[in-house]
Structure formats: structure tokens, C-alpha cells
Length: 128
Image 1 (cartoon, rainbow, N blue to C red):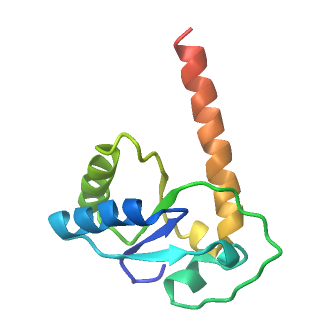
Image 2 (image 1 turned 45 degrees about the vertical axis):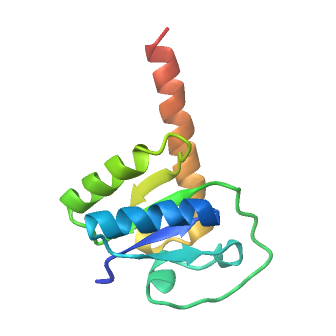
């Protein structure tokens, strides 16, 4: 896995990025790289390593995503707690794994959306 400790973010507006910047300063966390809509066919490894290969033929849903690369458990926990304190911001949160680092962003996002859908279904059934 790439050694670059950073967050990858997708789908954030300026106001939301300002909120993340504040959290980063307060918690002394590593900064973030922005995944742009045109980077859907790139692997996470390439994005983390600073490559930018734009393609326009890959549909990517309008979702908010934060991926944590190479964070310690304590850093992830602190960041998640701070992010969740903003009730208006409900991004998909995930950690880059040795497997997912080789996935194209659009593929990872599809998997994360499916996982969220299954989790919501489970919670609904549990609360019946």
C-alpha cells in the first residue's frame, strides 16, 4: 500500500471542504486530495501517487466520499467522530485497503454504495 497518509475526497462543495479543513487543523490530520468526476477510471493507487488521467466516459454518481489512506486507527476514529458531528454532511466513509488501492474509483464507489444499501436494508429489518 502506498505510504502517502492522506484523505481522498469526492463530491464535496466548497463549504464542506472548509469544514474538512477545520477538522484537519483541529485534529492535526493529514490533508486531502480531491477526486474529480473525470478521474473515475483511475485506480486509487494512481490518485494517491498524484497522477491525473482524465476520462469523460465513466459515469460516477453524485455522492460524497471520504477515503482514509494509511491513517492509524486513532486518526480514523477521531476523523469519523468529527465528520459525523456535522449532521448535514453524510459522506460514505471507508479506509483504503491493500485490495481496494488497486481498484478504479468508480468500481470502489459501486461497491460502497451497494454496502450502504445492504446496511440500510438490515437496519430497517432490525427495527421492524
